[in-house]
Structure formats: structure tokens, C-alpha cells
Amino acid sequence: MAAELSERLVELVRWIDPGPDATHLVSDVSGWWRDAQVLAALGPALVERFRPARPTVVVAPAVTGFLVGPLAATALGVGFVPAHKTGDGRLPAGPLTWAQSPPDFRGRRVDLAVRERSLGPDDRVLVVDDWVATGAQVRALYRICALRGAEPVGTAAVVVDCPAETAAELRLHGLVAGTALTG
Picture 1: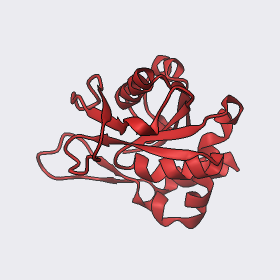
Picture 2: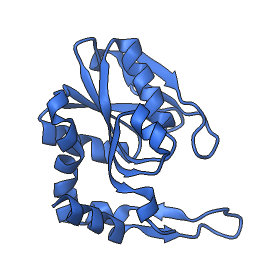
Picture 3: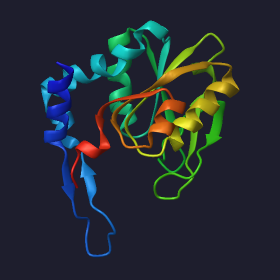
Picture 4: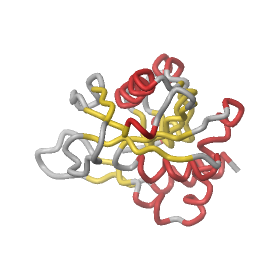
């Protein structure tokens, strides 16, 4: 089943040329969200390896993390905590815990925040995202966990496109290797 899901994920990715000033193609993963079978299988596939760690909550960054995070949380039977980014125009009210990522694949540093009341010392956190290229946002989320006293148990991603050392450091498991995608 996992191999079939991985194959289908690869089939559904499209690459778009954003225009003459672009330096690279942009991935379009909207096919994942349109395919009911993929949507149903994603959550259970993402969390399977992490069940023995007994996560108590799933944390995922905006924007596409807000799609895969709840799928993973539902598959585990735990809650979901969104990690908001500055600039997305939708920062929640109330006290927030912030961390800044190291530079990402575009050289940007991203500020991420979670509501303080949503994450605490008794939490075992599974970080979930759709695509991990550098691990920068995952590192910021692990920092937030540390600041809140929570324990990150690992990271699940649909696509892993980072060096093996980074994946090992972040306890990262993915469904598709970035090298399997053409673009």
C-alpha cells in the first residue's frame, strides 16, 4: 500500500514554469488534494512509523502543513496545533511562542509561532509538513517545542528533499524522495 501511495504521489505532481524571470520550475501538488484515495491514505501513511513514539499532538507550519497536519492528527487520534508564519496575515490572538528558522532553500528566514496554551511540557510532538527541502522550518518548530518544554518525537513529510544527514538529525521520515520527482 505504501509503495502504491508513493507512486501515486509522484504521478500527481506537476511542474510549472512561473515565467521568464524564474530561475526554476515550481511544484504543483494540488493533485494530491483532489485525489480522494490519496487524501484518505496520507494521514495514516505519514504517522505509521511514529506510532510507537506515542505522539500527543501534531504541529505543522502554514500553509500546506495545515492540510497534512490535521490528516496526520486524525490518523493518530490526537490534536493539531498550527504553526503560523509572519506575513500570512492570520496571526492568532493571545500569547505566542516564536522561533526563527535558519535560512531555507531560498535563503529566507521564516518566523513561526504557536499559541502558548496549545503546547506544553507533557506533549510529545510529531511535526508534519508536505515538503522538507532544508529542514529549516522543522528546526524552528523543534525550537518552539524546546521553549514550551515539549518533546519532538520526529518529523513526517510527504516529500523528503534534504540531505541524509539532515533527515537523520531531524528523525525525518517521508513518503517520497525528492529525487523521485522530475522537474
